Image (cartoon, rainbow, N blue to C red; front, side, top):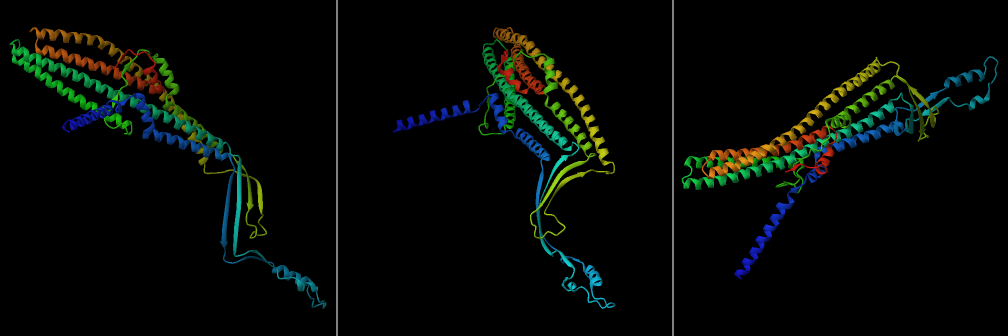
Length: 476
């Protein structure tokens, strides 16, 4: 029975290890494409931008309704203080005077007067019900309806540009944070390798001290360097944790993202990049901010057209049908239809001043657009130079890394033979780790600068092409 319990326990341990290995090795792995898909599906900022665009689309549909007739139905029950009647007794008295008995001539008068009732005509009872359907259809509004529809359509386009800007910005943030975590993990690897080298150096120093080839101070110097390497590694691990938290927050904390994330898409560097003029031209055409400003110009011009329309007449068709005819007075028709016209003759110059204000806004937007184009072109050039600078930095570091690796080899060999000090070995290893981190920093800086350049140029989605379809020089 004892061996059976041991066998069962061993199986439980193996199953637990296998489960943990699966959870850590696969559940935490995340490609950049998966991260972008997760962000697009769950990011609240992006969802809010989509809802804003949907709201503008509904407003556009509402503006189209201005072309259509408006129909309304009303129903009222009313009670007044007393019935409304028309008193015509004066006419009855005049008829009696003309056709009644004549005391002078002795004529008996017209006998039919006896059958003439009192002249009191009821018009409206004190309680009545009114119900009607009214309809109107605009024929001409001075261009105001067309202006409202143009402005509504422009606001939809503006919201679409804002949605693209939000998506591009979040994509750039994702590239920055995803590759930031990848960079942080690579730095941890470099620091761990440096610490491992220092551990080996301390071990060798102890052996050489025991053999009397180096002094105690040199061995102590090696141990101090190892402690410093351990401190740098711990700091890099903390930086990695911060980078991971930033990435998780951008992923909206969805299920399956909690815990350790392993970004498996490598940092990359490619020289297959278009000239600067290509990106400047694309930015002036596709930058979402410029597109939003252009739509502001469309809305300003529509505002001018709408204000001009307030100075012109409004012509419309109208119709009315009574639903309850029993309580209608003799003066009220059962239905009516016709053509109407409205025109403001004087409003204290408010319409004229609103028109002037709309024209000024048009000029204002034109100036903003001109300056924004200059700023976007300048920013695009700056970001392009940043990409090129990271390429140049990487090229310069290739030679430095080769020299640093050779220096480590030479100084380590010389230390083992007693021709170099511990300080020489430590400096050589520290220089090599620094160059390796700078090289990683250059590639990470290249990826971030490229993402910002593509975002500014309105080509954010092209980052996938540079990452997957272009020839890669290095990947980390």
